[in-house]
Image 1 (cartoon, rainbow, N blue to C red):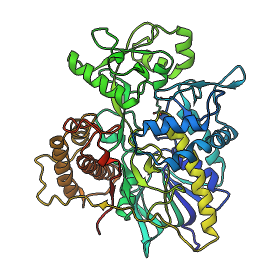
Image 2: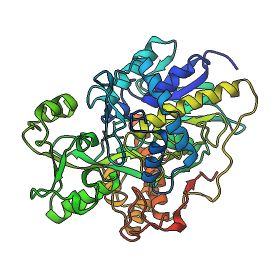
Image 3: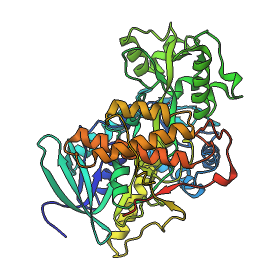
Image 4: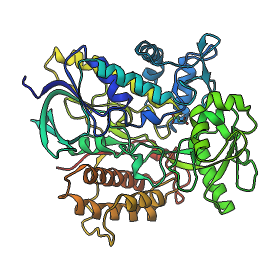
Length: 519
Ligand code: SIN
């Protein structure tokens, strides 16, 4: 294959997953990066806490492995986790080589602790601006390279030839023109889908695009019922939720309810550093108990010098909104943060469609299971991006396109032929529906209502995709529908998936729910 519109690699998305993969792939072929907004707009940019790696003196890959498996609630793939922890040091070294300025202390990389890590192992940059530093470093390098970049362009359809990926249909969102590109390898790195929810820490681009593209191409999608809610996003009237990093609790921040009482010790022996899902649910319980829509994070016990140097970003954001966190309490509440599920991949990033790969939050490598350990996602992205490029280098020299073996027990979305809704689809309606019905606390009734409404909305939206906002809404509706149906099917509570009607975990559910489109 050759021609003006042919690329060895087409990468969709420009967060750490897209850009890191592009930088590795550029030596193996020509690369096109397509992104629907500005190159720097993505979830990575807003990541504060950092990147986990077992590089500390009292740490080891084995300890990191154990913590990751414990967080995953029985659903992490041990083989993928082993790869993650064994290849972590190489990832960090590569990021440093690319120019990411990780913070140091006494000449060594500084490490902090976050929830459910037994030792400090989180690297950070610019205090609490880790993601922003990674994003600007990688995007600068990509712009300096020969990589072709198309900004404000939206991937609308994967083109298949005999079941293999052969290209991509792309909409230029500024001109409305549609163009097709051919490729040997297509890598989906579009991030997550936090925009499904009324309260989220995610970028406006996180609309499930990669999951929907892959699903329509026949790829398997797995673990979609597991969506992580970050316990502490700023909750100020008129201000969009802004992440207040878990590292703030790692450094000693204390949660208090609106009556001023510390409460996390009532819920878990690790208190503020309990697993993320437990902290989020405990906050919801306290909010309900006190009739409030928020709790407070108190950092006044920390020195102002520590706060302003370790969390400069959070400090100045709050100050801009009239809150000096060295003196006053930070109002916080949970917000949608990270999609654990995604396009099912093997340990080389391959999906069930030949030629199609997925990276970062779009992919489900099996590392996170039912609950992601804090700061494992940037690490996962870099480790598996490297494997994607290694695999594609091998495939370039062979004609054997490998794919995942088909999963057992694949299910399709129920047809719900009679589904109807008395409201028309809108982003705000969708975000409220998902927040209220498929949020932190779930039940059969709430999820079934959501699934019916989303099915009805999907039917209404099918024929009217034309511009970025209509595609965003459509992709969110499909992603939400898969999520609601997966959550409804899982009749237990596990990790981030909590059902009031099935509050316990069940051994019978120690398995994955895999969806694939019926053609
Ligand atoms: C945080 O800084 O709390 C976010 C870290 C993460 O989500 O991994």
